Length: 202
Image 1: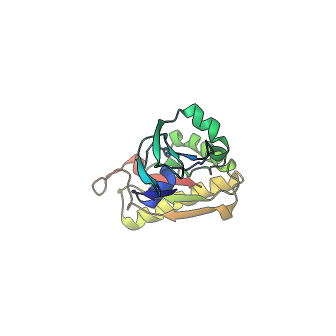
Image 2: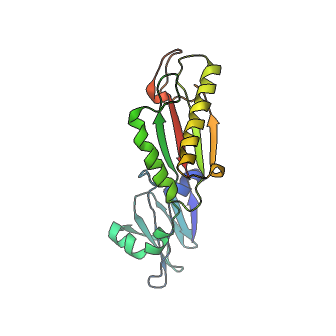
Image 3: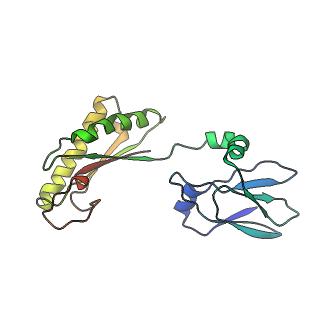
């Protein structure tokens, strides 16, 4: 059996999974969606032919003496039963969180404060977490000031995580100033969603 991707590899990694199981001397391949519900495409082949899979939870039966054949959509309950061990063994996917800040400040706005506990809970469930803390600013002020401000915000979040017991060695910080806004604005426009720190936990 061979699988031929017709999407970029990075999408294939997150979009599909192969789980073989013995069934009448053959195997079953199931196409799973990624964490966002997106479904990739995969061409499953053997010496007798091939079949394109592009539907959520689509199953294909494989036997060496026969052309691969779609078995239709496999029910969620059946997938969880047959592939329980494989699904349990899947790594925890990266998680992304946003913290917003007051204008010209490294003080987190009240609405974002509870997000810190959510971040900590996600970090603690991972055996060897790697945390990236990315500081950002809106377009109010000069590029130089905004770069320094976004760096200050990233360091503030790093310090808060360390105070809660996160190892400093597992945290990487970067500063992007006003260069990567979530919302495009004209110069000197203040936007809360752009005054942020992104925390990515892997």
